[in-house]
Image (cartoon, rainbow over all chains, first blue to last red; front, side, top):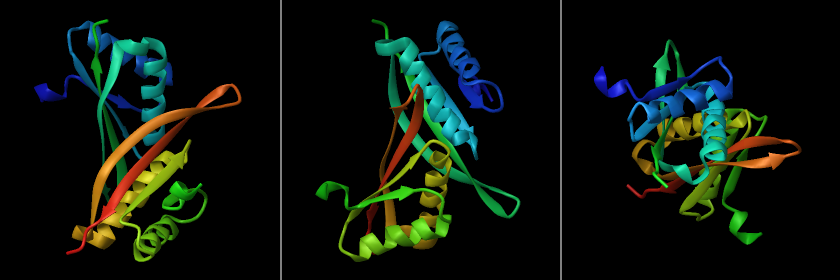
Length: 89
Length: 89
């Protein structure tokens, strides 16, 4: 799915890894990137966002945050999608 | 702080407890309630939101989601604030 190319899915790696993955996507030419986290990684996705802002400062801005859940067997798993935009300063 | 009265702070209790706390605030007359979670409770706050929507269906709508972090000693702790509005159907 081509539209999914600019998505960073937050999992077991370090926060810094996902920050770098996001910056890499910016450098590949994507103006917007979605940072997605599921279940316990919802908190980590917010961590990634904060670390990214810390690193890029005014070079990044928040487009929006969406929250939802998906059915996983019998339970609902929370999902967060944090959309960020690169700003040329 | 009076403005903080309609905030549900998600902690160690069950998701259902926080759903009920939110509904209680609606019943007390607040039209909008903020569900706040810090650190590992960011995911749980999203869980609370999803369980609330599951229970109230069209009776609740999402106003917005904000994410941020606070300094806690030497590390940054992620925070999420999920603002919901009661809808009279």
